[in-house]
Amino acid sequence: MKNSTIEQLQAAIASNKDAVDYLEIRVEQSESTGLAFRGPQLDAVDRGFALSGGIRACDRGGWSFVTFNGLAELQERVTEAISQAKLVGKETTQLANIEPIEDTVRVEIAKDPREVSLAEKRELLEAYNKLLLEYDPRIQTTMTSISDRFATNYFVNSIGSCIIQERMDISGRFGVVARGEGGIVRQGFESVHSRTDFNALVGIEERVLGAAKRAVNQLEAQSVKGGQYTVILDPYLAGVFIHEAFGHLSEADFVYENPRMQELLTLGKPIGIKQLNVIDDATLPNLPGSMKYDDEGVLGQRKYLIKDGVLTQRLHSRETAGKMQEKPTGNARAIRANYPPIVRMTNTAIEPGDKSFEQMLEGIEEGVYAVRMLGGQTNGEMFTFAAAEGYMIRDGKIAEPVSDVTLSGNVFQTLQDIEAIGNDTLYTNGGCGKGGQMPLPVSVGGPHLRIKNVVVGGR
Picture 1 (cartoon, rainbow, N blue to C red):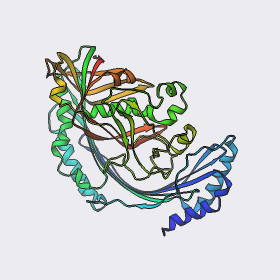
Picture 2: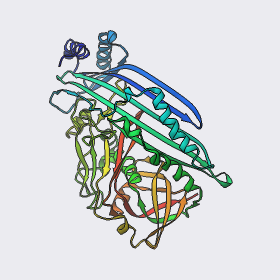
Picture 3: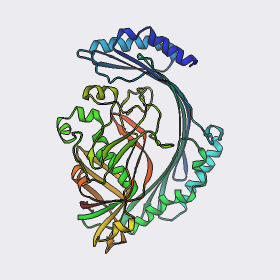
Picture 4: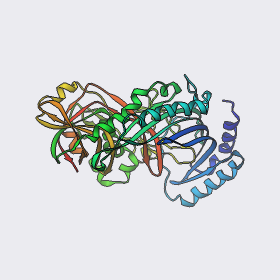
């Protein structure tokens, strides 16, 4: 693998690897563009070229992390990282063993955004923004943007791994704010993402307009009456639910540091209905969370967090896997090379079941259909989500729209209260936040879910 950057990193590792228990260097070279409108005004035009790097050293269980912005300072920063690790290390380094890897991972690009001029990108975004502004007089403002980023990541460590990975991210985000009678305000959002093709942003007028339609439709909705209902989640909200309410609980750094969660999340424990299967899969093509190797050089994998209702696996870095005596799963990720890898999800989803949407509606005298997500929070096993849209279900049919739909409960009880899992599935892109690193590209997925006894709050 002949590459001047890699050769510099390998030389720095070779001359220092015996000084500590473990040493790694990551470098990222990137180029990006971004344009944004707020209302009718062009709000931002950005173009950037960057080099960032990070060094992690571990000695006697003590970690250090040092960043740099140029290879000229590499040796000085490696020395600094080593001395800091020696200063804090007082125990035993526990890292799960992995085989060293040498590999180069290229992106196969269909339409390269770097070949599209800023003027063309502005024209495209301005047309979408105008569509949203003119959709309805009640649209007050818009927040629209398109961005693209191409990065080459270099990774070398003291066990002999040497990996070059390319990554492309192309995104469009479209939001509107609508205001109705009495000052009622509603929002609508739509997003589009591709890992390979700028044309994913071309010709998507109907999809973009969905953001405006959803916001305006909700202006007519009355606030839902609070109470306990049978609820059907759409695939978008089902995916966000499993990511936020359960996926974060599966991250082993959280479990390792939390004795109560170790008790609640014992592997082999029945945790949901038998039809429930939950995956975290880095191998799915063209999704934001997909990758061949994580930021510790561990191969990305498909993992069953829940299989047939039983807790079967959790998400690991090499350190958490070593400390918990489990296998590394390829879930150590960082948003950039100048941030340390921490345990993160990739593409997290509920696998589809066997019920059609019509079958799921059957037998519900009065319930709620909750669509997309506006916001939410989790606290341990407790969650609260606000749906972007809501509809009453009456006598097995979708009825009038309702607003201010918030869903709350205990995730472990909710997984037991699932009554039906849809035979459809949908993945949506997102940005996850944890440990000051936001937004990390992930996707969430799932089918429609029918859940009994959900506490629904209105205004």
